[in-house]
Length: 460
Image 1 (cartoon, helix red, strand yellow):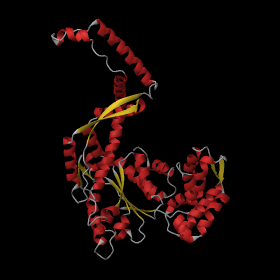
Image 2 (tube, rainbow, N blue to C red; image 1 turned 60 degrees about the horizontal axis):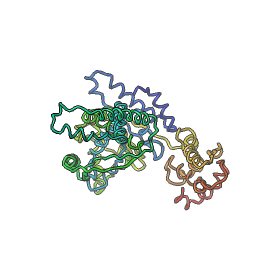
Image 3 (tube, one colour; image 1 turned 120 degrees about the horizontal axis):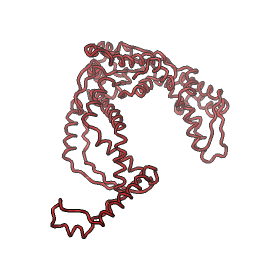
Image 4 (cartoon, rainbow, N blue to C red; image 1 turned 135 degrees about the vertical axis):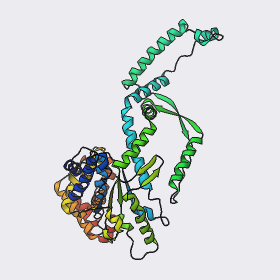
């Protein structure tokens, strides 16, 4: 969270091409959260996040900017589709569920952080248990047990035979521990007994029922019978399983839950996609009533309210909301005035040009060309993309977007799959190990399909 806005934009540039205005807006919003943590407590309560609304066609990077931002800052992040709250009946799913999902995400982040803190101790305990499995304790001497049956526990003393066995056993344990640490026993098989509870999943789409669902779930967790299952696995697999078990025992469950709620309240990011789809038309009936109802339900959450979750009450006053929509058939001003006012920062994302497609294919760390090169490398085939080949791909993607529905950068997925479909099928049996993707190669496989508009609708 110590990144400056300029550094945040630079990191986003590694994955997303263009859209500098949107990047700058989210970078400033994140930096303001860092600033808020450092002001006096009295003023901190008054500073609310400046929510952002991104406006632009699909496939230009709206979701990717928000997702990469959350990964970059380590903040809890969830993406919800605004339309899913209109699907069933008047309310569909409970709108408050987005906050509960955010807390679950925060719980995972906090749990991972706490596990890392106790990792060394968890590994030590896991190795102790592995040694016990590989070398069980020797049985006590029969004669010793018979001699001491009538004696008090305090008067019992080990026999010479038991002392020798104990020393030998500890020496063997030390040898096995060293072998485990050196990774010499990874393929040995051990048996692990795990306990689970058969807890039924309670599903409810009725408004207001989710908090009751949590109560029933906890009740079943307490009363459901435990079932013990024996699993055979390698030492390598067992170590990971045991480390996870030991880590959970070392960390405080209450501490993790409290920290998760605090993290979600102060650093959580909720990305509401397709917000333009809940704009109601002038006809106030049917689905339009549902859309208007979703806006009314969203309003208190974005304004700041308290939501009940199974980990405690969560305040949404300082959660950052980022809304996005194409707004083809509606305008941001068509939303409820109160909801509009809760998204004071508006940024418009631009349509992608041919030059943008060229940059998307070459610049990002995980660009499509690099992905396909890595995939083909597993078949010992080297893919070489020449500049004129990449330019031809960009031309086709741009042209198809102009002739048909503009789906932005996602068009490159269909173009690339069409381009390399035959190669992907024949790769395991090919003798030629170097394939050059140039303009002629692209034209040979894409040109006919792109010119036939009826065929393009189904393929590209």
